[in-house]
Length: 89
Image 1 (cartoon, one colour):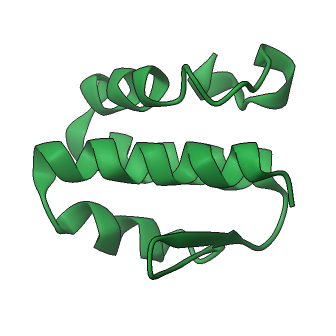
Image 2: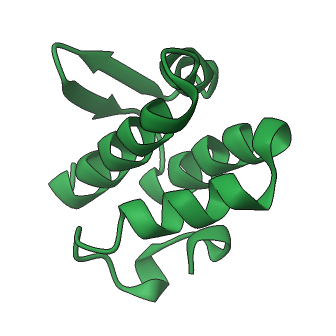
């Protein structure tokens, strides 16, 4: 697994946690393809699709601002636009 995707998932969750608190982790768990244990992220499935589902989970409840926050949180992970789902480009 490409650790950049793991870092992206963790960054998104942590940034959302700063805004909405522990609910951010509960929402991430609903994606189903993300397992977080002791601060370590495990992604099952296609990482690009998992990122998309994660951001959509937050967007449903909190709208476009949550998408912007997610985009901002992954700027330093080193994924090219082609490696990201459309929602994060």
